[in-house]
Image 1 (cartoon, rainbow, N blue to C red):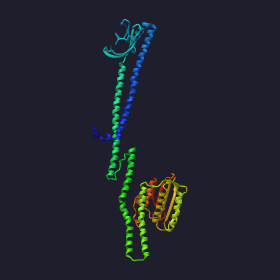
Image 2 (image 1 turned 120 degrees about the vertical axis):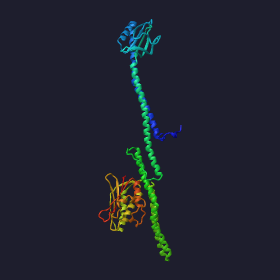
Image 3 (image 1 turned 135 degrees about the horizontal axis):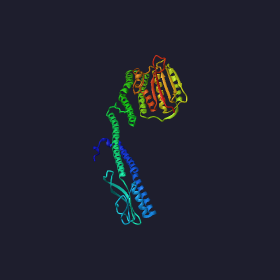
Length: 465
């Protein structure tokens, strides 16, 4: 058999699981129906058998206590009462003594009992002859007297037939429904899986805007689709950043390299003393350091986004932030900026200490760099009501427009007014990457009030140790 000709959904794992489910359902249904049959039809048959045995035992006791005459009397009384049983008593000479039949339905055993099913004719209330079925026992007594005790199985047979029909109907219906249900479930699951597969194929073909369909049911496929969409969104953002990173690097490095080349060319054209050449070399070294700083920032950001971080340790964030405040108090004083801090004690983190400190230094460097003289910078560390730790750096600089606050977290994005300042446009990108690695939250808003410019507030929220 060529399996490739079967429908696609029949070759899926979900269809095989549906078949297993169907088989288990059929086994359970079969066992249940078998039990129901045994508990109904089987019970009726057992009750009839028990009643027949009791009747034979009673007549045997009559024979034992009173002999043939007592047995004959008991059979005559029972036969005339038209009870549940049918009788026939045959004397030792083979002649009928009493009962409902004229002859035995089978040859009597020489001794003991013989089970015998048989058919007999009777007339109904309308006088119509009808064929009936019965089951009974033939018993031969020591004096060769033969007793037949039987019961009509017509009503029981009709009931058993109905029960059997119901059981078979239920079994067939259960089989069909289980198979239909299995096919429906497998096809439904296959469609969801196929939808996810088509999404990944379209993304691999270059359509980075493609997203998996979320049906809103909240099941595992919806959760998988949501995770996949989040991954694709991040992948699209990284791909766009990677696509334009070359242009951004070229744009940001062109100016220092051009200045370096022009300065070297003018230095070679001029004839000067040793001091002039030393000055040219110092200027060249400074420009090369700026270029190297840009590439180092790119490498650091790539390592963080690639998951290459140091070990996570528990450390006192309060103590580290106090040291940063002492350093930048002097830096702000030199830059003619007012500096203040509000640092709560005994706050600890379980994090990569070096990356967290680099993040804080980046935020403080940006605050000092872009805040004009006469402004202010503030460093705040506090514990929020839910137990998280919040670190904030506020300044009174030009701030960042709300529509650009997401963009400044991307690689190499720089506001036009910031391009006159030295830098690579990677500082906030590194801050965002470190925050994401530590599963924190980064928020940008307006900074210190009371100044002509809106300023900037960068808040980092992390889970405390």
